[in-house]
Image (cartoon, rainbow, N blue to C red; front, side, top):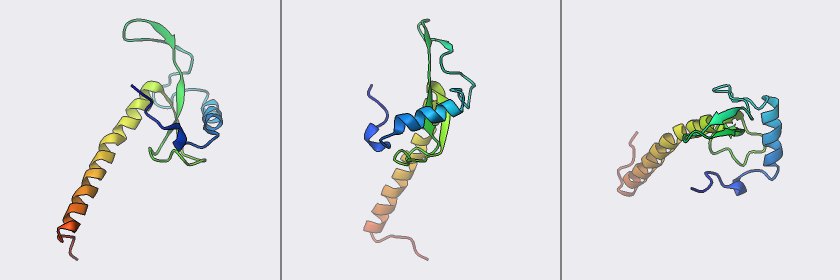
Length: 110
């Protein structure tokens, strides 16, 4: 599986923005309290040290040099982002349906 994000959509200094934000939150997940570097156990029982991300509060705000961010562990970041996928898909569906209705001349009447 490839990366879920496109680096070209982020500011050039994203690594600096991300690091400074995570440091300001003590590298601690705002949802579950996991602290970067604490031991975790994988599904197959291997121990490893995890990390936290600077996650965008709003999913399409990646090119903003001053975004609203959340400090989340990898698991919480994935769960947080996934909740938007369904909403975005529904919005895209509604936009397609609206376009079809307009093309058929059955737009909204006031």
